[in-house]
Length: 429
Image (cartoon, rainbow, N blue to C red; front, side):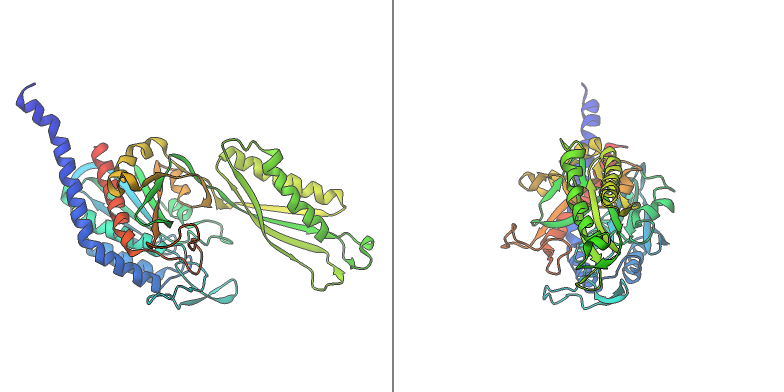
């Protein structure tokens, strides 16, 4: 082979190495701002579909970087588009923005003191799931990519999404509504990446091809019997006893009615509401819960078998059970595109280091990022953010009023999201 041929073969690798080094330098330069942004967002959390301050902050940031910005997508969502200097694929990054109705107890100097109305009463509001970190990381990645715009062989689409936490009792989740409003079109997105912070070694990354996080379906069962004096239970139909039998019977769906090999599943009851007095058996019991599965077929089977089990147990005692499963307000399993995940895992290893990249187990937590993955290839991963010196077995989990994020992990998130965009573009020119 002549020298020109050798040069042609080496050139892509040289360009790749140059862009990779540039990403790291730009990420380092934005680290302090990312931490500052997170602290500000953490101190000013907003509930689902109320992320007005957050949306304004990210929209102004994207505009300042030269992105084409669209606001008020799916109520408060923000979308930024950055066309690179060279033709290539369209790559999206997604960050969810909403906080939770949780009163913060961390004692941080930037702890939230925000109050808001939720469920008809005043509650504390906190970024107890780490969405403040997601927004700040993605703002950082947006700046890194904007500063190397002319070198990018493709187009970047940044999606700041509302209402990941709080669709119910609304009819759609934030991701679903953004898709319905065309967020993956104009330009058509080829691949999408997202992350979620969670307890774990600070800066470590966990990812898994295929089924990763569970589906989540809201479950409500209304058991109707016949009211009577508690001293004369035979004078009516006791919906409380029947509800207890239903709760136990639902556990046979997983253990006896579906194939559990290779695909775990859960049905849990979280609330039971019945009665007003200790000596009156009421007419009705209302239970709510959640169904979690990792497979589309098993999800459908669960819906049918949970309904049948509840109805038949109630019928056997002379009562009725009305079962509502909110598949329209739930979301599918988060299933990482296998080929995409395998192709991008080396990128995550380069960012985190071989010793800090782990293959995740499946988790029964759920994410509406799955709506994006049903439309296009997508990859979702976890970033460990537990401050050093903490007991990882006993640290506060997501949704806890004591949930903490280590600022030192933010740079790993920025680098990961930025490198994924650049590497995907280079691999798919």
